[in-house]
Amino acid sequence: MIAELDKLIELQKTDTNLRKLKKSIETATERRAAIEQEFEQHASSIREIQGRRESLNSNRADLEAKIADNKKYLERADRNLKHAQNQKEYETAMRETDALQKQIVSFETQIVEIMDEFEAVEKELEERAEEIASLDGKRDAALGEFDSALSGEKEEFASETAHRAEAFATLPARLASIYDRLAQRSRDGIAVAEVVNGSCTACFMQLRPQVQLNVKKGDEIITCESCTRILYIAPKEVEAYA
Image (cartoon, rainbow, N blue to C red; front, side):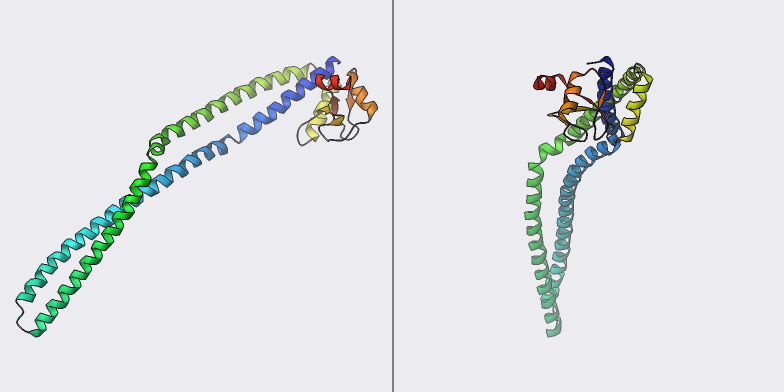
């Protein structure tokens, strides 16, 4: 294989890697936010359960306070009943006593329902205790791993950019111009395409047998008759043609 073709293949691999790294770096903010959002959803669901527990405790305390107040009113109604001077006072005291007793029973029933719900909430929190305890640690670890990987990608991008400049500078001016033109006009940035099973991997068109043989020789620059990209055959494919 001629040296220029080797350089073009290496340059294409470098550019493909640079495009991948560039895309990853450019989307880093969104991807990091997605990690944070995932953990926030877990944290939010936990806070919602804990909020329900607090709300149940608050509602229970309110009901217990109302029961205490009503019992005081009931004691007063009982006294009024005992000291009623006439039928009207007696009936009024009886109605008040009955209403207060019913209200107390209603409040007590609500407390029982709250206790049942509270027990279910406590059980759910107990089942998720490990998740709750490790959530912050796992979040920090995931973000730390992401930041470390991103830092590595940025370092690799800088290194590959420098390598790319050096490799491109070694190409003959005419070949460098052709490579740039092909890379810039293609959406995927592919200027040099591998031939696999007799087809161009850029446009997937089957190559004529003579073109395949010329590419296999590797002693000149051959372009795809369909997409005009520069073609090459990897060593393993060359063996398959033998």
